[in-house]
Structures are given as C-alpha cells and as structure tokens.
Image (cartoon, rainbow, N blue to C red; front, side):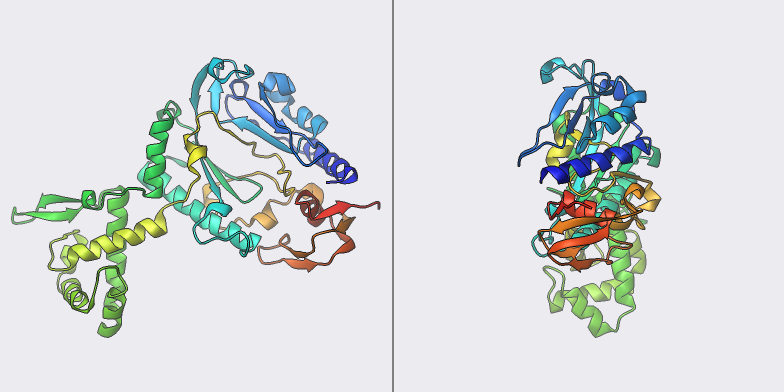
Length: 395
C-alpha cells in the first residue's frame, strides 16, 4: 500500500469515526484493548496490552480516540481483567470471558477461496451462522438478549454469548461446547434409550426432548412425510441413497413407515427391521447439515481479542456490524455493511488487480473493473484500496 493510499484511507476512516458513535462493550474498562494502525511496509503492528483508560481515557472518549488515531483495525478482549493493561497475561487478573464463536468463510466445508466468489462465500457463512444460532437458542437455551451477532467486516461472523453461566468456563469446558456445536464424536447410540411403551414393554426410543436427539427425530418426521408424498418406486430410490440401505432394506423400511406412523411420531426405533439403520443414516445427515463449522481456537481461547462492533475493517472498509437475530436472514454484507460516509462521492484510483468487484446494492450486484486509472464510487474505491487491488491517485 503506497503512502498516498494509506493517508487517504486513514483520513476517511477518521471522517467516518467523527460522524458516528461507537458503543463500547459491557465492562469496557476491564477489557484489554488493541489496534493496528495504518503503518508503512508490508507487515502490520499490533498495539495491545492497553486498558480503555490508556487508549482513550475511558468509554466516553472512545470516539475521540478512534477519530484521532484512525486505526486500521480495532479489537477488545473477550475476557475481563483486574488489570487489563498489565503486559504479563498471568498478572492481568482474569475475571471471566464472553463465550465467543467465529465463523470464517475460508474454513467452511465445500468453500474454496480460490474459486468461490466473495458474495457466495459470505452467503455460505450466513447459512452456517443461522445453524449456529439455532443450536445456541434451541439446544443451550440462550436468549436473544444474551447473544450479540456481529458481521466481522471481512469474511464471516462473530457471536458473543454474555451470561454468567458461561463466563467462568475454562478452555477445556469451552472445547466441549465446540465439540457439541460441531457434532464431533456424536454418540448415535446415546441418542436412543429404552423406555416403556403403552403395554409397559421396554423399547428403544429416540430421545426427542432436546439436543441432537430432537434434531434427528425432527428429521425423521420430515423425511417420513416427504416419502409418503412420493410414488412408491421414487420413495424406495430415495431410501437407497442413505448409507447402509439397499433395495431389500428400503422396502422393509418403506413398509414400516407406511404402516406405523404413530410409532414414527413416538420415536420408536424398534418398529421393524431397518428402522435402526434409517435413524443412524439420518443422524449422519443431521450432523453434516446442521452443525456449525466454528473456529475452535477462537472459542477455546479465554483471552482472545475480537473486533469492535461499529469499527471499520481495514481489509475491506466495511463496517463491523451488529445484527439482531431476526435481521440475519435479510442481511447482505456487500450492501448493508457499506459505511454511509463512503456513499456520497466518486474518487480516482489506479486499479492494479482487475477483475470482479463484489460491492454494490445486492450480493449479486458485482461488476468487472479493468486495470488502470478509473473513477469509481467511493465505497467501491475504499474496498479496492483496502484489499490491495488499487492505489489512490491524485484527484
């Protein structure tokens, strides 16, 4: 990044911060703060081990600090400390930490950053976010007011869980949560228990009250309903797509599902030959499709620094946006994370890395830009400058 480009971005970042209020997290005075300034050269310099008092003189002065220093990236710790500015981690006096989840499009199964477009990566990441939120709400019972959903400004999303029940968990306990959310080591046999039926006889039954047992039972019900709507041969063909189900087993399962819908609704795994095979196959599908591929080190690190909502991401120029849970489905980062400050004018840039530009009104509103000097809308220019795909020219 050339000097003119750094100076331009730093100046416009400062204009952004002067025009808005950035709300600090709860207990801001007890968190460690860090930032990366706009420095020359290829590398970056992280300034950390600071309290908010060191950085800005307190929460009320955070906006003034950001407008004055115009950092490229801004972070705060998930943890709270007695002495957040102590440079020795062991001497900071750890009090507890938010439970933080990170979803990065680069790490999603089936996403190749080399071939997948930026909007498509973000769309896949949003789907994974919705799976994560479903697990946190339905399985763990967290309320909306205990969850803060944040678009990272780059390639993914963060979820902060702020509740006393998880604040004191150590890394090992948080790793168990990660394993649950990702469905790692799921004991399929453990989803089933022996319960008395209406005749008092013990029978194998799905644990449908909650957790992965409920998810498998929900899938069993929806799958069975769909099969009943199909012609028999089509239903048999679909059954044979499941692992471990051949033609003979498919016909057996089909007969059971047709003849005993009450048993299916009750989660009875002893309906007849093949019922257990069906449940295990559906459990595998549920784990593949409903788990969230969260970044384990972020969740298990009880001293992690995380991006400040409301700040700008120095690698895209996008706003690190807080989102209400019911707004996630309609959120389009390439549209809704564009700072209003960057919408009102055009600027001149020298494009050094031509190609698709995925920034516009909608996720699919991308266009191709050619190499050389170009006049572009400012938010497009900021994106290309921040990504290292262009340099600022004189106006």
